[in-house]
Image (cartoon, protein in one colour):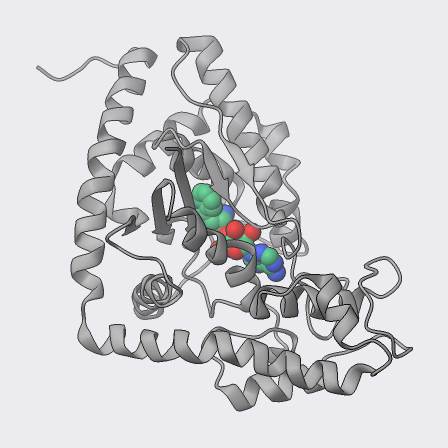
Length: 328
Ligand code: TYM
């Protein structure tokens, strides 16, 4: 059995991109592997957060995990700040990272571009992410394509620690879906679908009501022509919609292409909207149930207790190897 670890930030609304790129794989992996899934609130504060909103969104994302099908009987679901060892090991990895490698992170470049002042937390963000992964000695990290570079750095930091202090950390592997690792914006297929895009028509939020989903999909930009064909280089918009369709309906791209052969975009987009609604509607019903029951707090408490056992052990071992004097 492999160990799996991943996290999602509690910032803004989660999108269909988060679901297809990451959460669907969380649900799949929990059937066979030992899984740790967390809401990464310590990462969220690397950009300004309003305290009440951060609290609400942390609970909301945890409830969305469960609503999406993560079963707390199979997976450890918790909030990152509830497991204190993350921050401590994160600091230790910060001291192992080089300024140059952190400066090369494209997410840092994107998020800091054009800003007058940039928080130091945003800069060292990937070292905390490395701690998140390595603290559980994870084998596999299910993420979307945009996290690949951060994961590469986690692997480098694991190697660096092992070379300097003794072979201890497992070097994790990314687990990235073949299709859907990068769900693009509905209004511009050159950009990633993102909750921080100011145009709400550009993304589908997991909590968008069905009619909003239908409207957003009917207005989604499509390439000129009328052929429903997967060809990311020449038909990026339609290819993106095909990826979404494939994940939501559980059909292969070829099956979908064959179904709409010679039919144009109209029928395809209509059915696509229904496929998305058929995934989101039950998820939203379950989400509302969980939020109103208050059950999430117990789930998070138990998840943090179990995660802390594994994390505290790794932290103690890493501190010993690094040469910290243990309290007696
Ligand atoms: P975050 O919160 O930005 O995104 C959560 C997950 O969703 C994936 N994702 C997408 N996949 C496909 N298409 C998209 N348009 C799309 N948008 C987002 C992301 O790749 C990610 O898997 N740094 C991480 C959180 C993190 C983490 C970790 C992940 C912190 N510690 C340890 C794995 C392991 C982040 O900001 O993800």
